Each structure stands twice: as structure tokens, then as C-alpha cells.
Length: 327
Image (cartoon, rainbow, N blue to C red; front, top):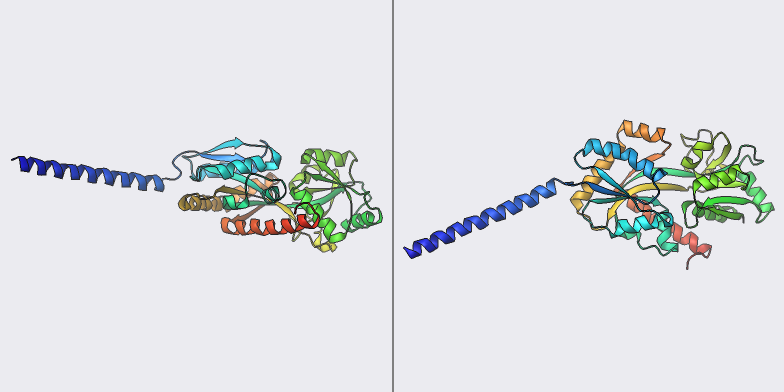
């Protein structure tokens, strides 16, 4: 009788353990299949209301349509030209619940020249969503009517051409270095904290020219003229403005924005994010909203975006070394 009780207890125990293990397996499988099962943090490394924030907010609208049960929770981690926010993204848990917006070449230049607390290897790349070409702009009544006229003046007057850029070790700075490399000019570099300050300086007559982005100049087209755009071809936002290549200067330079997650993020979560971002960027309504906001959209899938970033890293490193800005 005792043997039967012991055997019965053993069998019951086995059944309970088996059911528990099955339940755990199902729960684990269910949790994975349900990603995201909670709200997703969205780190923006620049101020609320800026171009990066505006773009992400447009995208949020369409994320909410595709993933209505789990919204984005915005967190603004600003400072050091985005480097503080980018570093926080890199340090976040690789669980798929922290996404971050990044800017290129900022995220390339900061580790190279400013000792930033992150590397481009610290991320998995979801997608590129914006390609904002850089331009050379002057006041409407400027004596300059082409980029070549600017170059000719700068060569004849070393150190006198006043060129406005936003920050050092930024996209603007990199384009100015490339312009110097390709033309041999030696201008006076005037550095501003932001595009608003830079635009105000140009309009106030403090500058001869400014290097900015398409998005930066769209609001002031009644007061400035754009002499050239550093893109492969004419841009729909600035019809009639010739490329630098068309003016004999082989420069393509832009600010690109995209999204990343920390290195080591679960592959299934990463693929989910890549798929959703692709769907958003293919939505005609999203495309129309981006154009209305003056956001020059250009989608690039995560794998290609990652290759682009690494290529820009090599280009920037070579240029900075040439001008003695890094060893």
C-alpha cells in the first residue's frame, strides 16, 4: 500500500512539473511572439521641436497605426551635438524597447574627434529615413551668383571669405573641409551653435556665405539665394538650383537621419522594427506629411544604412587627418 502511495505521489509530481514546464515554454514563446509587449522608449538626442524631433513625431503617427497597442515614449537627451543622447542609446538594454534617432555624420565624427562615449559599432541599424543635402547660400542681394564666383573670390582674398557653419566636427564642418580640399581656398570659418543663429548671422550681414541643409534654408528662401546643392542631382525642394558637381566641384555632402537600437538587440525584435519602419516609409500619406514638413525623406534599409555609416567613417577619418584635426 505504501509503495502504491509513493508511486502515485511520484507520478503526480511528474505531471505537475511537466505542466509547469509546458506553461513556461508557452509563456516564453508567447512573450517573444508578442513583441513589443510594452511601450517603446524613443531617445531623441536633440531639442524638442527641432528637425530630428519633428521627423520622429511624423513617424510616430504611422507607428501608432501599425502598432496601436504599444506607443513610443519620447525622451530628450540633449547636448554635445547629439553625442550625449547617442551614448545613452549605446548603453541601453538591448531588449528592443529603446530606439534612438541618430544623425550622420555626427555619430561618425564625434567618436573620431571628440572622444564621444560610443562607437558606430555599438548599434544595430534599423533604417535611414532622411537625406538632407547641404547647400551653399548667400543673401538675396549678394554679389555672388555662383559657387565658382565664391571660389574665385576666396582664392584672390585668402582668409577674407566669411563662411558660417554650425559647430565643429559636424556635417557643416566636414563639408567646409571638403570644399577647401577640392578647391584650395582658405576662408575664415565662423562657427555657430545652431542653424537659427547661423541664419540670423547671414541675414544680418555677418557672413559672406553659409553652409546649411535644405531643411535649414527652406524657411528663408525669400531672403536668401542658394548657389549650389551638394547632391547627386537637382532636389525637388530647390528646383533650378544646380549641384556642385554641375559647377565643377565634385562634392556630395548631406545630413542623414536614421534609427538604431543597442548592439545585441534580439534579432526578431530588430527585424520587427525594420519591417514596421519599411512599411511606414512606403506609406503615401507619410511621404506627403514629410514633404509638407520640409523633411527630405530617403529610405534606406538597415543593412545598407549600416554600410553607409561605416563608409562615411572612413571618409571622415581621412579628411580629418589631412587637416591635422586628428592623429
